[in-house]
Amino acid sequence: MSKTGAQTMNPLDGVKNYQVYYGHPTETIIKDMQNYDLVIIEPLHYTKAQVEQIKSRGTKVLGYISVMEVATWNTGLMSKLQSGDFFTRNGQRVHYPEWDSYLTNIASPHFQGLLLTEIQNQVIAKGIDGVFMDTVGDIDNEHLNNPTVLKQQRDGLVNFLKEARARYGNIAMVQNWGFDTLETSTAPYVDGIMWESFNADTIKSDAWSQNMIKKLQAVDTKHSVKTLTISTRQSAESHKLAADSKFIHFHEADAYVNWNAGLVTRTKDTAPTPAPVVVAPTTETSTATKPEATKPATETSTAPKPVATKPATETSTAPKPVATKPATETSTAPKPEATKPATETSTAPKPVATKPATETSTASKPVATKPATETSTASKPTTAPTKPTASTSTTTKPVEQKDSKQAEPKQKTEKELKKDKKKAKKHAKKHAAKHAKFVEHEKAKGNMCAKAKHKTAGFLNFFKF
Image (cartoon, rainbow, N blue to C red; front, top):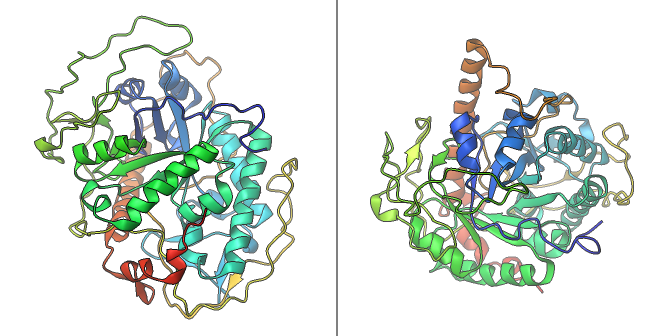
């Protein structure tokens, strides 16, 4: 099922502001989330009752899943993976030591079944509106120079998206990076794509980025795919650039682990049953200051957005567990999905046949093919774009509340809270490291640096309409 026929609207239509937050919710955070048109969360941290509270005034919610990587800390998912669910190169699994995760084989029907079960348990069962699919960019990063494997992985992703639509209807689907995969394969099935590191100082001066803006606008016109952008510096300028490009923007400087409170104020209740709601003053200027200043006062947004952007000072609900801005974030060009060295030669098997959209089998479906394999002379695979603090989980029993209007869910013990806090800090550190690596455009990836790859013939043909 594609975005045709009965579906006449993109679920992201009308979304003018959003925020990404992978930390644990509090009552204050949940109430502030109601001021946004869209929030992207780690669904493992939320109950169905909390999700309903966020949505009570019309806020849309997307739940995070990782599509092309699985982290070893996610023991629930790791225990369910079969050998064919991992992508292998030279007979070895592709491992990212920086964040201890493995590249997956989305062409595996078994792995697709695990992801579909995850959507059922953590998204559908909790009343979340759709999924934010992280690590899709790994497909282009890892396989762009290997056409056989590239097609195999893209076909696998399309099959997964078709099956998700067949099972769960017109849920919102947003992929993170994977621009070439979007244009060639996934545009008919997704509603949005995220462009991280959308910083005005580099975007304005970079020819690739300027061309990419036009490409994404064309994809939106043809397939109704909205672009969500994120900046880590120059908040006001980046907001304006995104608004001028008809993109939906969010400024982030702390690795998605701190909720940035008071950034927008909803002036109109959009819930189906309107109710009196106390809103902040229409001047939308915050007088609270962060315990740790993360953005200069000059970063007040002047973008012509229908809703307010960031005020000069902001209130953070939690201290920063990690450094927020790597010193290396001074590059002069945003990094596209890096390709693998041209020295790679493919010994991959033929593409795995994809399932028909009407098929409803899940994780129990046996894998009909061997693990995806690839021969490469590269000793170190390229890395994926920014990745949030939590990965896909295979929790099979979602926490549900019989009464969605009941009081706060059962409080966690002090031991559980300490464990959660420790995990959150670990994830934040991993995310900050990954983001830092992503923006280091001048460092070599494999045996070619990102700037050199911009100039290759393959990259010049990166998008063809």
